[in-house]
Amino acid sequence: MSKNVVRGVVCAALAVASLVAAPVAARAAGKEAWVPPAEPAGKPQLKLKVSKYEGGTNGELTVEVTNPGTAPADFDAQGLYFVPTGDPDHAPQRLGAVGPFQVTTEQGSPRKAKLTVPAGGKATLRLDVYCIDSHRRSPRTGDDFEMASARMPKQLSSEIHSQAGKAAERVGGYAAPAAKSSVQSEVWKARDKKWIKLDGEGKQEAVK
Image 1: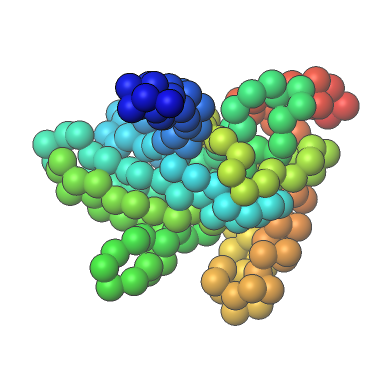
Image 2: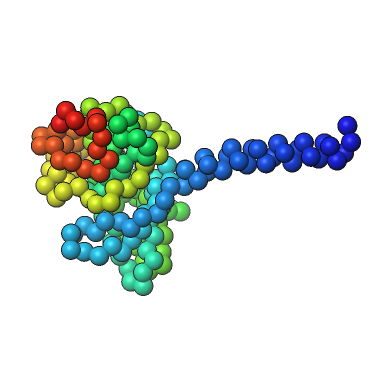
């Protein structure tokens, strides 16, 4: 076989490989969107892009938060939730951010309830997220999620924040391994108490 033929075979193989890999890389990167303001009358100041999800019924969602403005802006995760991409009729549970998040720094990953992002700055955060649809299947590591267009209604967000915080405190805080099941139970309880439609509803919610 001539060198030209071999070279052609190698190039063709590389081209096919790049076509196969490209959609995966694009999907994993997610899309950037404005973070809904904590107050309804507020103006969006930060942007967020989902990088990856790791976990099952609950886990960690790694996100990148950027501040394209000319003044510092505060990031607060309370009330944010994330919708799985794809057909909502067969999608896994949506995920709600609960408790303080971890900030990735050179010195470690401290937990914070809020973070001030400087003008033009960027931060990589790991959000503790919990399933909010007990009737759906659990998500899996690698599932793709997008941030919802608005935060949860204040009533639901406040109840989850209050009850989940008490559950975590009883077992040593959100970072304690025992907190996962306790907090998840409170999140489902608050969600099912009075069903409120959120982004990503499908036929799976017909019984609600």
